[in-house]
Image (tube, rainbow, N blue to C red; front, side, top):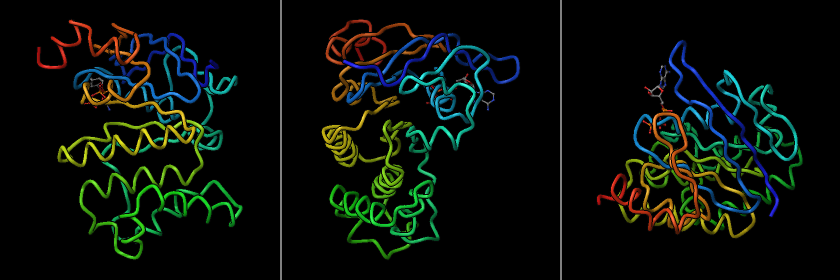
Length: 237
Ligand code: ATP
């Protein structure tokens, strides 16, 4: 099993407040890994550091054998680390197709970009049906699909997701999680940040539980789901 991302002693601060206090974890190539925890635990902050949008106070981030800790965000995207934004951040006055093509901004090969677009439409037929509609007219779940599709257009090696289930109806949550499993089955490594602990651990091979900026548990998704501490704190006892 090869390691795609290795994080050592990552600390991130907002001014004097240390939100992430020395995380050490890794992601295996080809797996879904979940980072779960309560509101304010430091999950989003961790993802922002991996994406290069926040600079760590200390620690090291290695991707595909390369130290990316000090790289600017666009260089990190170029290497294949692509984040689906929390709150989705799609461009509502552009069409679905235009939003998707924007996701390929780091790429130049038109034929390959067109092939990626076909793959995204195969994964999300609803997006194909609505290709020419304004993204702002999509439902919440469809907007989440669009955000994921747009990230896939960058041809990531690692997909980072921040709360993809947030604000969605249960049936739509199921559909999004099913799609993540399918995307992973096609070979993509995924880091899934979620407050929906049960659903996330169900589809994750490995998981980390984060509390107030520190990893308190690390195990397989299956073992974490069966862990009484996880059950009590996150699964409603
Ligand atoms: P959520 O699910 O609410 O996003 P989270 O686990 O992702 O929670 P973070 O958003 O990473 O948590 O926040 C970690 C800590 O850092 C919290 O105490 C939060 O209040 C603080 N924090 C987050 N963003 C900022 C900011 N821009 N300035 C100051 N403090 C911040």
